[in-house]
Every structure is written in structure tokens, then in C-alpha cells.
Amino acid sequence: MQNTGVAEANEMLKVEGLSKIFNGHYALENIGFSVHRGEIVGLIGRSGAGKTTLLRCLNGAENLDSGHVLVEGKNLSVLKERELLALRQRIGLVFQGFNLLQSRTVAGNISLGLEILGVPKKERQQRIQELIHLVGLEGHETKYPSQLSGGQKQRVGIARALAGHPALLLCDEATSALDPEATTSILALLETINKELGVTIILITHEMDVIRRLAHRVLVLDQGRIVEDISNELLNRGEAKHALTRSFISRENVEDMEAAGYASSGF
Ligand SMILES: Nc1ncnc2c1ncn2[C@@H]1O[C@H](COP(=O)(O)OP(=O)(O)OP(=O)(O)O)[C@@H](O)[C@H]1O
Ligand SMILES: [Mg+2]
Image (cartoon, rainbow, N blue to C red; front, side, top):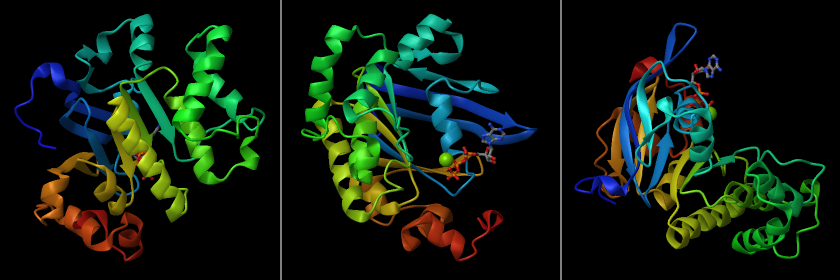
């Protein structure tokens, strides 16, 4: 998907001049990009590059040291607490480790997403059933997380993230703990969510293959900076400009590259 010539109204997210400092060091430095409604954007980079910190800045979980984040045109930094809470309901989060409550069933974990949003009890049951159907977990409602496969656990995590009908889904390594088969099924589910519900997705991954299969565009993060912002189409044509992006392509997995001894300063 091309990133030009789209009207402002179509903008889901805009980040300008964003910096975040931890202990005197820039975890993120002068980050700028925008994401259009319906786009799937991959975020790739080595461990410590700042991917999770960036995602946390996008949903208002971190205070910024400079710059701003606009979600659907609203500046997160100037919103009052109540408005920020309302805006954060427009954003769903999916985690690598699923973050499920072991003491709750599949339905109970999905219900949690609705309880947090303050959905009345009598409305929850129907929405839980819709979500179970959406993520393909019919028949598993009363199982506990320990009785589920990794892929099924992530389906619960995705259902919970979608509870409040978010416009934007932020996924932090959503498939990194899964085997290849489960990865494929979760990528297919995310694609369905994007195509059928129109949900904009930003996903962090270590795997170039995940980017190729799902993303329309990729941002490459290195030491807190975006070093490449490229469409999947150009990526597949071998037109990546930055050495780091090209290394990811040739090695397929960022961790393979780390294992091969590439140092951060080498780029
Ligand atoms: N709460 C925090 N306090 C201090 N430093 C932090 C904090 N959170 C992150 N950092 C630092 O910011 C940098 C970026 O961390 P971040 O977790 O965003 O990286 P990442 O790209 O998500 O890495 P990984 O691939 O390992 O998950 C790292 O140097 C990290 O140590
Ligand atoms: Mg991370």
C-alpha cells in the first residue's frame, strides 16, 4: 500500500519528533511517521532498538520527552485522563506472552477485556460469543489457558484485545512464541481482522517472513531511530536502501543476525 496522497481524514496515527529518554540515553530519537486507516505496518529491529517503547508511546503508556502522537487526530499528550482512557479503548494490545489469567477460562479471559471497558454484565455474554466465533475458538469457551495450545492462547489474547471494537491493534511479537503452523494461523487471523473489520495493525516482529506475509509496509528501527520506512512492494523488489534492512532480508531473522555477531555500531 502506498503512503502518499491520502487525505488527513484517512490518517489513523501520526507521530512527529518523538523522543524518549531513559537514564540519560535516547531510547527513541526524533521518530516521525504516519499510518493510514486500514494499513498493516511492521516494526522490525534488533533487541533493544526501541520497538516496545515506541508501541508504549503510541498508546499513551509512556510520557514523551519531546514530540507528539496523534491517534485519529487527537494529541495523546494534551488529553485529560478521562479522554485518554476513552482514546485508549480505540487501541487493542496483543502480547508475545499472551498475558492470560490462568485462573480464568477462555470466556473469562475475554470477559476481562469487557469488564475493563465497563461493559455491563448482561451485554458481555453476547459479545464474548461474537469474539469466540471471530477468533475460531468455538467449543473451547470453558477451557483454562493450561489446556490450550500456544496458537489458541494467542487467539484468546486477540479476542480480548478486540473486545472494545478497537480501530488500531498493536501487536508486540504476537507470533514469536509460536511454532510455524500456529504462526501461519495467527497471521491469517490478523489478516482477516484487518480486511473484514478494517482494523489498522502495527506489529513488532523479529521475523522478516512475518513482514513479508502480512505487512503492507515496514519501519526499521535501529538504536532508537527509524532508519528505513519502505513499502512491502519495494522491499520485495529488493529496493531496501539501508544496510540493516538488507541484512534482515538476507538473514530472515534478526536473532540469526545477532548470533552471527553483527554489532550495532556496524551499521
Ligand atoms: N522502563 C525502562 N527504564 C529504563 N530503560 C528502559 C525502559 N524500557 C526500555 N528501556 C531501554 O530502552 C531501550 C529500548 O528498549 P525496548 O524494550 O523498547 O527494545 P525492543 O526493541 O522492544 O527490544 P526487544 O526486541 O528485546 O523486545 C533499551 O535500551 C532498554 O533497556
Ligand atoms: Mg520489545
